[in-house]
Length: 215
Image (tube, rainbow, N blue to C red; front, top):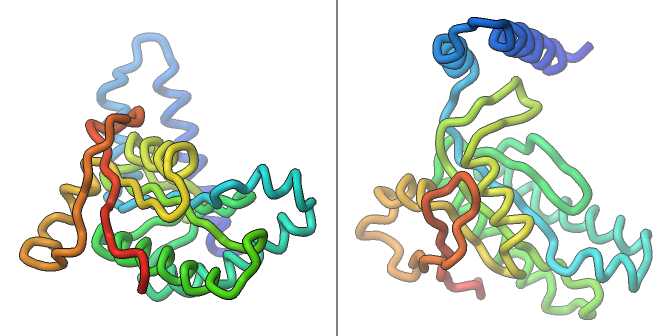
């Protein structure tokens, strides 16, 4: 068994025991919740990625095209994630869950990813374009080893990246915007957060990043 697998099993086992204790009649749920957050609570920036128009392309071009697009997107994007110190926790179909210690690193990574795909798509036929949607959140989450994270900001970032964002868009929660604001103060005048009418569950507000897409 890998070292990572041992860490995940230990974390999962401890959490399961605490949840079982929480289910007992008369359990002090507030105290148990405090213990769970003490054990597993960490602050991370959360990124969810999704490929725009993917289902329609699968239906039109078939499963091999589906696999080609996924492989090519990961070949292009994963080195950018690594360069920005992101940690990929999950890859499911055309989506990825990535975490960052710093919100500013997540934001820089998101912009770099979008710009890299603009360059890649320039000499490609339309059916081979890779069009990325991104959702970003930041806050305290429950992190179990290197396998998964849970929390309101995780849910909100997922909704923004996988269900709401369109091609080229970077959508963020209010918590993410607030976390990155000190690093942007007096800095890049080309970045602006535009408030959305839609607020995903788990967030107090959401914004679209207005940025220069062309590198």
